[in-house]
View (tube, one colour):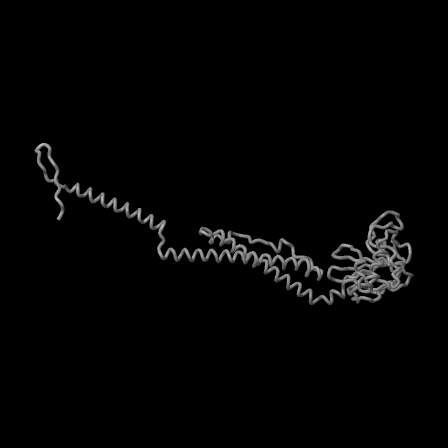
Length: 324
């Protein structure tokens, strides 16, 4: 039963019953509803902000576990980066060097991914940076591994051809030189016998009597058999050995081979002469690698002992006058 409330009327000096109108009741109900809504909102804010439900706690644990897994994956990808960099270093500086192959350009190894943002769908999450970073590293490693696998396929093919390559690369002296006294002038700047000025001598001169046999220093194909011309080489022959190597034999008296003929290391291709710009019977011998003339002294290892090789290196290094 609702309590009856009274108020004291000072005019009549008596207590009167408080009459409650519908407006009073409506206002009280409104105040109650408003207070209840405010209390409910405050409770919801506190519970939503500071109190996790069992489901939210489970989801947070799953998110944290996923974040840890991504961090572990990121660390493993960094380790793979290190291993892959070591493989690339070995490939470029050991394997490909052994087989005389050019290293793979960095522009190919480190080629990026063009086009639109590949990781746009991964943005907008709490750990988007970590997820995108892991995804990008995984893509880069996948690309690098593909390039490296293709490189190893090429190296494997080169290994199969190693026997043929070793037979083709120049490896002996082009004339018989058992007493090691036939090297008259080495590679480098020498006094030109005609112009009397220091000029790059791009080969090695072997002094020998006219008619001394000249040997092919490696397997290959005759690519040039020109007669006396304006080059100053006189009668000369070029052998293409493949793998970027060529050898040149100049000032010959007779040529025994023709263009397109295959020769083996040790085959006689002609005889020493004195043709062209030559001041005495001798053989001018050059080694060319990828279009660049290099010192032939580095390609006499097959028919010399280490002691003999050191002797001819010292002889070839003397700055004297060349024969051509």
